[in-house]
Figure 1 (cartoon, one colour):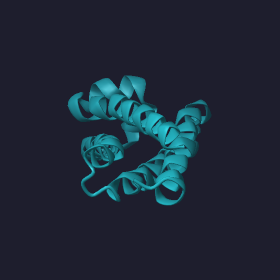
Figure 2: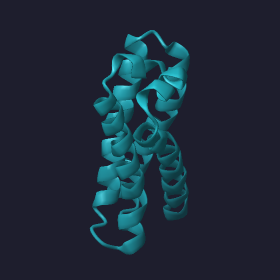
Figure 3: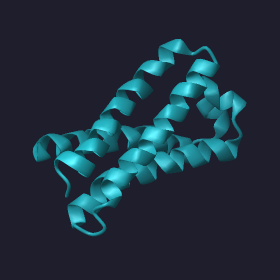
Amino acid sequence: MNNLLWGLQILAALVFLATGVPKVILPKEKLEKRMGWVKDASALTVKIVGTLEILGAFGLILPALTGILTWLTPLAAVGLTLTMLGAIFTHLRQAEYSRVVLPVILLILVVFVAFGRFVVSPI
């Protein structure tokens, strides 16, 4: 189970880095072309969401890898769970139903990691 959780943590971290970094480094105008929800959000909100995704990605890996403050790994998964719930709600509210699939998959992934690291195979 530990190996499975590690694999899922790495996968989730890579996805959240890939989605978070553009939100932080690209201007809002460029993101609007690819992400419909950005039109209704402030530039600061977009940067905050990207920063949360990046911090969550690091939180899934670094504490477990270093053995320092290992309780932060499942906590990062919980934070990313809340982020994905917000993403799902935002897409549903804007009637972007086809864009709900990835956040739902990521939600399931991080909930599994949180449960696994809190209960099944703590670090």
